[in-house]
Image 1 (cartoon, protein in one colour):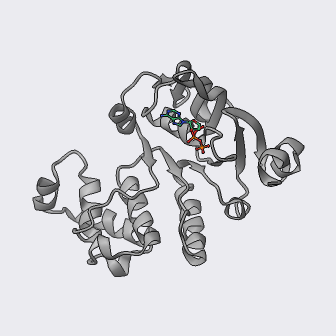
Image 2: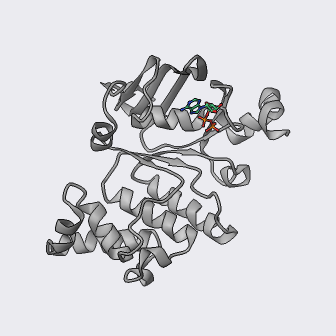
Length: 248
Ligand code: ADP
């Protein structure tokens, strides 16, 4: 694949927290439409990499390029979000007292205040967009539920739906299936597959069984560095990977 299909590129990224290098000389390249898993033992630097990409943490050295050429290394978090990189944290940031539908409505009208977003009358095509999103995240039956009353898994899906209505080009997800039931985990897998039809996704994941369900490329980090990259099969066959992560 040529340069034109690269959606995200990190070159020699180092993050130094007061002398401690959480990430060290990390190279990472994501192709358009890819669903990539970022794995590695606790403290490997995975979350810090997501923080660097979304602009929450600034690298000490190195560069982050969006769309293969737009340098976002020094841009502010909100600017990076506006450019089309959406980050989902482990704790859902939904409005628990509002309905599922209202949460999606607010997300779609991100540039207005919450009250203005709820007061503005929905146009037919906006209504359709929300309905389609409800269907994708499997919450059409619960559109009028208070978001706070949803299960843990459903809250995660709602938040993913809210992100998708902001039409990001890249989604960054940090352990999306953590705390989910088996059934919810399976549904989340289907959701990720559906999303990857139209968007590029980076998933930090701890659950190896979950990652095995995908034919995706896997990036393994260890002690802030790239340890191995390839298919799950290739990665699992690597002795160093087995040593630091899978064999434990
Ligand atoms: P992972 O997501 O792979 O578990 P992290 O990126 O969260 O790893 O952390 C990598 C290392 O950097 C850990 O040792 C962690 O303690 C350290 N670290 C993360 N954030 C900070 C911070 N703000 N200040 C100091 N050390 C940090």
